[in-house]
Image (cartoon, rainbow over all chains, first blue to last red):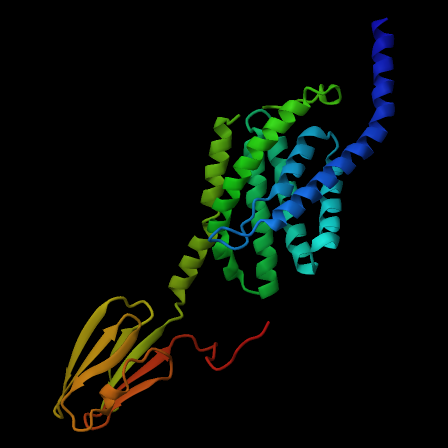
Length: 191
Length: 129
């Protein structure tokens, strides 16, 4: 009886997962775009130009912790990048965004895989935010053909880690609440 | 929420972000591209003064058989502020700081010239990338 129930549950999950996956990816991408649009309305209040809140990173972090397939997270990032470029951007914002987002994605997946129980969502998010800045600075120094732009890294990284921690705390709350939903019950979320 | 390793990772990453600063600091120390002033008396080399690193005020008295000149170094600029020559043109040229600029006292055969270690970058060329 138990076996049958498990089998039933399994098939149900499998059947649902395909539609669910598409809908969920769509939701996350649209949320990321909304956050990106809101963020672009906020003027840069910092002393450091280029420092942003990185609200779109919130969605990446949430996706990383709720989706089992790493390819789906990457898909969300790419879709978000392409659509945000079409909505309000140009080639240079795309280049900066792509380099930052892909590098931060790689670092966050590594950080999450390496520090499974040791690292919480905050640490992963802060590392991602910092490497987002690193990626952007690499592109900037490639465009200007001057590696001296890297000297700007400490200022940006301190700002990035600060916002990354807050994004991590926010993502922590969201993921904690999402884990109460039936679909995400079997997630191994380390709060 | 926060775990011990989170804080360790964050501190480590911030420390890592200062690596470019250190690397550039070492490289800058090796081949320093700065300006310096060369003081020549009667065509002969007299003194070399590093300018781009200079902060504060310094005075140099130059006494020769022709008379005296007082050279003042104010931050990154240099100038002759007093002399006992007739025309006092050297004082009128004021403080100079850019490579290629000159301050000359002809009666005393004293010349202050600004030079740069950076030979590759010509100051008149604007590179457009």
